[in-house]
View (cartoon, rainbow, N blue to C red):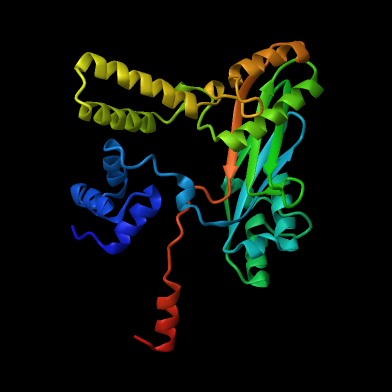
Length: 308
């Protein structure tokens, strides 16, 4: 397979590794981008490619809480300019409120009547596209609830209450004091915004992702030339560290920098006056996982002007 300059640049942007190593990695993996990232990582040349390196979509994340229930939505636009538009912000706020009754179903949400319009959410977005002149998309939604307790939220760098680029929901089940529980939920939501956990505990992680991580670590250890017995212990040790980094309950609480989140929750039970269980969290970062095609602006200008 031909390895193009564009492929090499894409891998370099995702990993921060030099062009020649990226080209070699692509050649070794027959142009498979994901396999090339793993090839570089097994040789210690790159850390895991960060999703943020591939994020380019604009728009807003909206969150709404209602005591024991909350919802989050993401609506994308082409530019940040539209995200600052009052009409767009109003639409996202209204859709977030509707999402409380959509049960995390984005199709259902799109079909729900938009307040005061006489048509659906999807139709409202279509009308806004025609008026504002930029494409928009209702990308995703999620709802969270508890039978007894609170669901808290946090929006990082909010442009308005409940609207921003990172939105967090945290569900805490407890029969204890709701004010103390709410304060804990707010702190945990801020931690989640900063620490980016992938799951509450290891058994909730995507097992394909876990298997891939283990395979990469195993290859790294093999290349160290250690005896099999020591190599296996090294793999298990690194996997434990991996779980500590990506699972919420094992992470160090960013607010005090020393206590594990699991212990923070346990310690808070004294103030709350009852056992606490963190049942779910949602972390929406605007545009995560969306790849935006890169364009060569100079080439576009040249093509438009007819210059070669």
